[in-house]
Length: 71
Image (cartoon, rainbow, N blue to C red; front, side):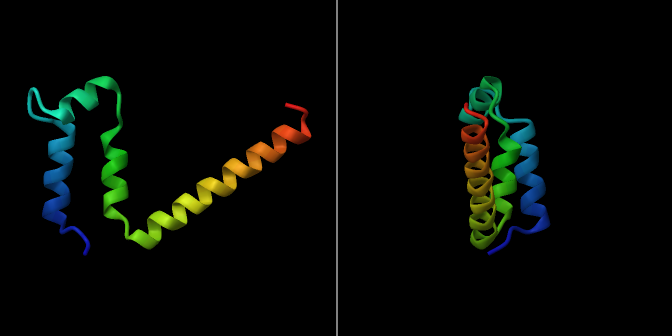
C-alpha cells in the first residue's frame, strides 16, 4: 500500500530533523543518507526488485570491464 502525501511529508520532516538522542539522529550524524531509505520505502516491491536487478547488471558489467582491462 502506497504512502499518502501527508505520510511522506511527515517522514521527510522526521528524517531531515530527527529527535535529539534518537537512532535517526545518530545515523544522520554518522553520515547515513536517510532520504535514500525513504525513496526505497516509497517504491513498490516490484520497483525495488527492478532497481536491484539494474544495480546488479551494472556491477557485473563493471567487473567484466575490469577483467578486460586486466584489473
